Length: 264
Image 1 (cartoon, rainbow, N blue to C red):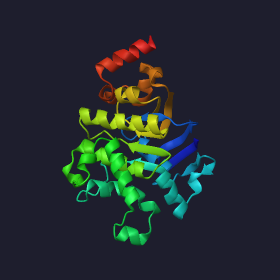
Image 2: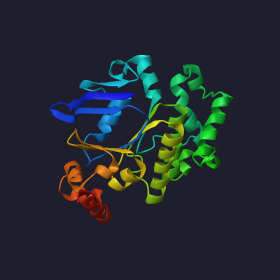
Image 3: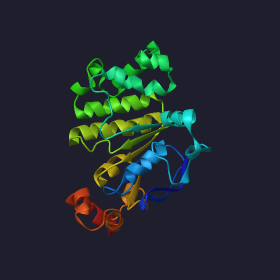
């Protein structure tokens, strides 16, 4: 399905992602963890082709994604939807219209200029919002919603693209625990009910263990762990985060005790 081979991104002399190789043979819910600057966001941006790799390949269903350009590249970005930490909504636009913007890549320039949407797309947008529990807010401006609600609007916009893959770059980093739980459960449900691959950059082991079937750990641009959440021992976690304050920030004392039991 998705194969990433020796993917590398350099910024001058600095290597942001170093020879990353990941195989996703079937739909999965994958969490990518690591400290700030580990290369998580750069990896997702290359998969979506928002950033071009310096070397390596991304292959999806036999198609070399790294060679795409123009309309083919835009089509891939529809098939591989991106959700951002800061939502990237149009604040003064109503919620339904924000969701409908997920169809822009397949609409004509004239229709885009005049904000013309087919009725079937409008109904589908409302159905998606209903699925995510926020249809009642469809007529409100996006800026009037809470952070958690706005992130669910961003998820709805991604679903309007009918993507094969959803990439979520720190989707809960700016949310309180309650909204974070709702957003992560929404992503988990999309994976389970739709059979879509969801790859999310996450901050803590607790979130990865609770919602993901597979965890990839990155450190200094390299993949240093790839396995099930229950395979994350204390040693593996320290390989990802190091032994300084970043480890303690990423894991609560309860999580560390859990890791110690796994290691024993």
